[in-house]
Structure formats: C-alpha cells, structure tokens
Amino acid sequence: MTLSLAMMMSACAVGPDYRAPDARLRPFHSAAAIDARHATAAPSLDTWWEGFHDPELVRIEQRVLTQNLDLAAAMARVRQARGAAEAATARLLPTLDFAPQASANRLSQEGLIGHVVRTVPGFHRDYRTYDVSGAASWEIDLFGGLRRGQEAARDEEEAAQVERVGERITVAADAADAYFQIRGDQARLAVAERQITVDTHLLDLVRQRRTRGISNERELAQAEALLQSARQTVPLIRIALEAQTNRLDVLMGAQPGTYAAELGTPSDIPAIPAIGASDKPTDMLRRRPDILAAERRLAASNARIGEALGDYYPKLSLTGILGFQSLSPNRLFTAPGFQATGSGAIRWRIFDFGKIDAEVQQARGANAEALAHYRLTVLHAAEDVENAFTTLVQTEQRTGDLQTEVASLTRARDLSQQSFQAGVIPLTDVLDADRQLLDSQDQLALNRANAARAAVSSFRALGGGWPT
Image 1 (cartoon, rainbow, N blue to C red):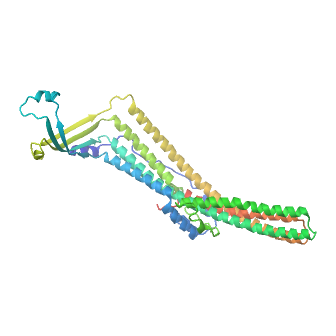
Image 2: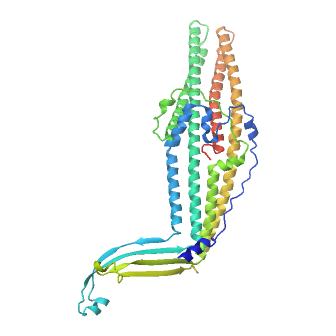
C-alpha cells in the first residue's frame, strides 16, 4: 500500500498541462471621453451604486443582494459543483465497506452438496451463519487519469463560484436599471400632467374667446385635440412605470406590488458619478466574472483531455477483506473464525473499436471550443465597455442640448401665448410651440434616465459589484 501510494503521488499525470491563454487588450479608445466628463468622484467598483448618493437606490441594492432568487439558484449550482469536486477527490482514495450480516439457511437434500452429505451422521439441513467483515478497494491512479478528473471538477467548481458572482453583478445592475427607468417614467409623467394643466388652461381661454366671438370653431377643435394628445401619453407612461416597478419587486424576491408604495413619491435622478479605472483593460479582465468563468471552463476542458487519455493505460485495483465468520455467534470473534482475503487486478482496454480514440477526440474538440469561447468572451467584454462608455458620453451630451432646447422652447411658448391673447398671432402658432415643448421636456426626462442607465451599464461592463 505504501509503495502504491508513493507511485501514485510521484507519477506524472497524462495529458497536457494547462497554461492560461494570454489575453492582451489595448486601452479602451472611449476612455478619454469618459475621463473628460465633469462628474463627482468615482465610487469603489465594489459598491458602485453608493456613488449616486441615493438612499433609496442603496436600500434596493441591499434587498436585491440578500433576497434575489437568481442568486439563490446560483448558490445552489455552486453547491452542486462543489459536491462533484468532492466526489472526484474521493475517487482517489480507498473505499471501505462494512457489512455485518446474519442468515438462516435450509440446505436442499437434492442439491449437489445436500445429496452428497445427507447420509453423513449428524447432518442437519438447517443452519445459521454469522459474518462480520469489512471490504476495502482502491484503484491506484498510476498514470494520473483520476487526478485529471479531479482537476477538471475543481476547475468547474471555481467556474460555478465565479458565475455566481456574475449573477450578483447582473441582478445589482438590473435593479439599478429598473430604478432609474422608474424615476425617468415618473419625471415623464409629471411633464405630461403639467402639459395637461397648461393645455386645459389654453382650452378654457379659447372657449372664453369663442363665447365673445373672438375665436372660431376651428381654433376650439385644435385646442381640444391638443389636450387629448397630452392626455393620451399618460396611459403609456403608466404602463411602462408599472412594468418596471413589478420588475424591481421580482428582483427583490417579492411579489409584484410589495414595495411599490416606497417608490410612489417621485424623486429626481441623482447626479452620475465618475467611472473609475476606465482605461485599464487588465482590470476588466481581472474583474469580469464571465471572463473568469470562461477561463476556468477552459482549464477544465484541458484536464478532461488527460482524463480521456488515462484510459489508454492499464488500471490497477487492490481489494482486501478482513472479518470473522462462524456458524455459531459464540465462536464468531475467535481466532478460528478470522478470515482475510487480498487481491489485485489489472484492467487494460487493449481493443475497443476506437472508443478511447473517440473520447479523446471529443475532449480535444471541447477544449478547442472552450478556447474559442474564452477569446470571444474577452472581445464581447471589451465591446460592452466601449459601447457603454460611448452611450454614456453621448447621452450626457444630448442631455445638455435638450436642457438648452427646453429653456428656449419654454420662452417661445410663453411669448406665443401672450401674443395669442393680444390677438397678434393665430392659435396654431401657440399649439405648435406647446407641442414642441411637450416633446422636448419628455425627451429630456427620458434622456436623463438613459444617461443614468448608461452609467450602470458602464459599471457592469467593468465588472463592478463584487469585492475582488
């Protein structure tokens, strides 16, 4: 046993030794624009949501990270992978079975043994046996096939752990995305309701002018149509608002409607913080769970090649049985009742119609696929970062332009109403100014929410949301 153990520990494992692929990325070309933003200090990537300085968002993230059911399922997958890794480790060690038994027997007198001994004086057909023994078996991993299997299972466990982290990043970002959409829809709803108030006042004014004979039926119809146009936007915004509120409740592991009241009071979208570590692809490679998981899956597929190659070599198994057996319980644990058996066996698949070849080919193909998947994952990650950075910068720039546009259109609308009341311009000019202002204010509210969502996408693309 000692010699076998030494051989097992010193033998080289079959198959290629794993070498992590070299993933080199140039600095992000959108990083300069991100660094040039005028924003507050960059928060820690571990808890990026705290950088928005919004207590409600922080409270939501805390709930999501403790109550989300996708995270619970991911943790269950980690336990499954850990169990598989422990089982692969156990295959390297001896197995001991302890199976005491007692049996009552009645021997057939017409059977081979009974027919011979039935004439022997003192023969009894009925007898009992008592057996207390333990059997040990051990497959010696001479060529390292089992160790390669253990290595692959360990790599797959690590991949599952990293994927759980990836689920954490995803649900944290999804929660913030839903929250900012809610705040954006609330702002759009407020714009629509203000516009309804303005259009209602305008309609009353036209009716008064119609009563005095100053206005005509066409202007009255136009004012009524403008009011209905403002009103018809409200149901669509409320539908979107309800959907995001329900989405957020599910992310927090609650039935839709559970936390809706807490978000019932509108609140401004907070200022967007700076994005830290924006010009370091190496940080992204170190933090992105999808990249880390793909690398671990690649390592596991490499080890599976060695596991398959191990079937080319002979396998040595040792078996031993120690125990006591007797026809009488009184003489069971005595020297005459002691029994011991030891055996060794070699199994070698010399000819199997190419089955091992096929298994090795399959393992090598899976490894090539895992390598391509890893490289593609790295490229997609870089793509996510570039897209998120560009979206954030351009959306913030559009927000500034929309603010200027809203201010100008507000002045134009006010001047149009004054000119209309003085009889200088027709009602159509007021309606056009009102319609343009409504659209611009709605776009501004929507764009502010989209800018915050782009920031969330940037943090997620960089792998923020977990301590490394």
